[in-house]
Image: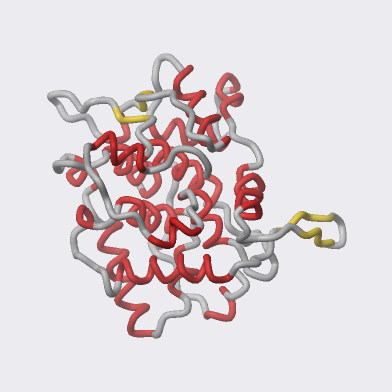
Length: 288
């Protein structure tokens, strides 16, 4: 059974008012070195470099309230998918070779390519689990294990706990959010309201531009991180937050182009030259 299903594809547009309020060490240069290529580094990421996990969480956080929607049950597995892609982009893990029969993405195993620490606690914890697990497991299995959504009691030790809280603390350390306590009648909850709106607005603008002014009509010409962010923000049910401020016409164009990306044959796309197969395997596990 597919790990993640949506009953009606992209969610219907909510009003802007409903959505309002809503790394350390080594980074993607590792992947550039591994590929023997240099890519343009986004100026914004130089200022406040965020991981894919932090970007997805930031899109989901309500600006003033400082927490994600209580009704969002998709973001947990989405963040685990982010972790796998982040490790792949940093050259730490890879997908096993497809072989002569070209097995589907979801049937191929995740292999440890390098156990060099990334400097990010969550990434290094996941990398350690992947390295120590024999025989290797599939992408879908790892998303289930890391999120604790497995029936196998022997695999529960792989669960990454308090991921949202730990990522929110990273955003606090980077000056994007702050920490507050809020009372909800029966319990107190730690929240992380936005303090630096510029970082989030730049992130939203980059997502919007990727499917509007910088649209290439070719997934393989898109920046890998942005392509991953669009897929994983969608499966985490937070992509809508980036498009809510758009005009009706731009919104319609943006959603149409996102749908084009989601409707791609992921196995076929993963066979093209120069791709990162782990990315497409995570997309496949998250969107089927």
